[in-house]
Image 1: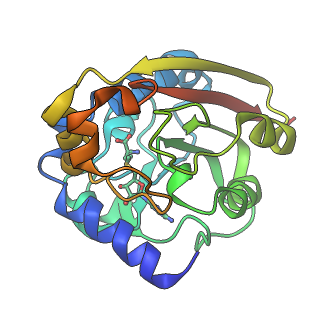
Image 2 (image 1 turned 45 degrees about the vertical axis):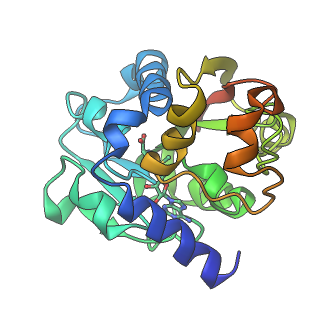
Length: 223
Ligand SMILES: C[S@@+](CC[C@H](N)C(=O)[O-])C[C@H]1O[C@@H](n2cnc3c(N)ncnc32)[C@H](O)[C@@H]1O
């Protein structure tokens, strides 16, 4: 992915840092599910790094599980809203984690991998995690019509070969102007494959095939 694209993504998430929580109801549901399904595996002495942590919808739900909780993100501004102390947060590109092999017990992520070159990010997660990892990521079939390049679930499953996984459809509870604001206020309006304009969506809501995300949840544990 080129530098200007990272810059664009970083800029949008930074700008949306104050409005993100209010509109990110889908992301919050996904974070809740991830924690309910997999967080019990984290032992209290183990380290956890939330990548693409942003304002911290997943991070905050992991606080009861370990004190060795860390967060990283492209956006320094978004991280300012993350509940962790300064020394536990750092900016980086998750495609190139500045960490040694097998240096963190668990890597976790919620609704972030699809913003990166996810194949590169998967290699990094694989390299850095010592006990394993779990994450959620929206996949192909989400908000059809908008033509966003979501990854194919089958491709991810083929690469990861997870111990456990499931796909859940999560509805976006906004329509009309609020639907458009959902993207703007969460910083998620960037679409490299944009085909239809905001105006067209307002005029003809059926251009959006489904007002929902198909979200892949998976767990990988190293033996
Ligand atoms: C939709 S938000 C999700 C934030 C958070 N995980 C949550 O549960 O609400 C996606 C986050 O991924 C970050 N991000 C996107 N591309 C990234 C990259 N290549 N490296 C690190 N962070 C990235 C964005 O800055 C943004 O904060």
